[in-house]
Length: 290
Image (cartoon, rainbow, N blue to C red; front, top):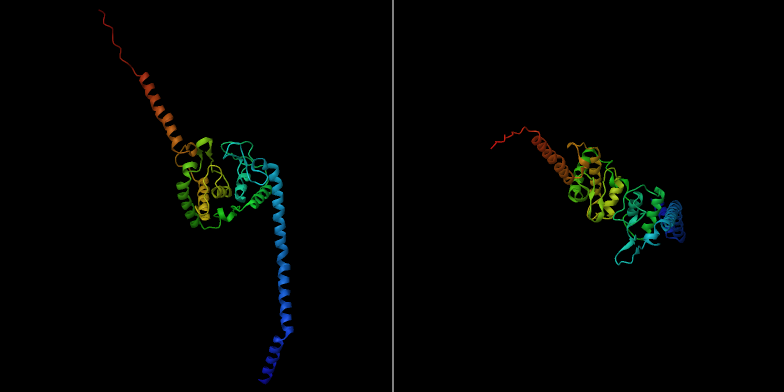
């Protein structure tokens, strides 16, 4: 017992000595240095990679986008007050660039009522670089991950529930422009709501998030990320849904169906009535000679 007490006393004296504090300090420096050596190079490499991507995006922007949007993305006004050749891109975020450039809507050949989708000019890497540069101009929506707009990880029951919820959201908020099955339709002042058939889920998510052109902006405060995902799940389900109504007329809704009914349906009935009347046997009255 006395031996243990003596040993404890010696250890206690060593801990209180100046060498013990120095040893603890050296041990702490050794541990922190080891952690920094393991983690700092990766972080520095990531920062260098991001800086290179922004620099590459700036070169592409100056060559292809600055004519309309300005050298720093500030936009270029026209002679008419309140109008711009190209709007400011400060704060639009990487998601807006990925949508506009990835779908080929930008660069725009000439100003018009609406930018149509066409073949993309830039590669995926160049689009990513442009998005990184525009994102560096100001905070904005980031490019979504696949997990944000895909229901692949859900069970069959959860998928059906997501499609049902998405259908209700779509019918409430989107059918006025895109029609009940996403076929699109005409808009005022020469614009139009594009068809959503065959559009990638990422671009639909980005369109809801950023509100391009005539489309309203459904931020995460208006529609949560889960609700956006559910809308995309509903639109995907329409691709494989059978058509029970026969000739769908493009799915454009009651206008085209009503026009078809008047021209073909009622027009056909009128034509049949005229044909029947012209081929019916008529009685002839003989003339009475005075």
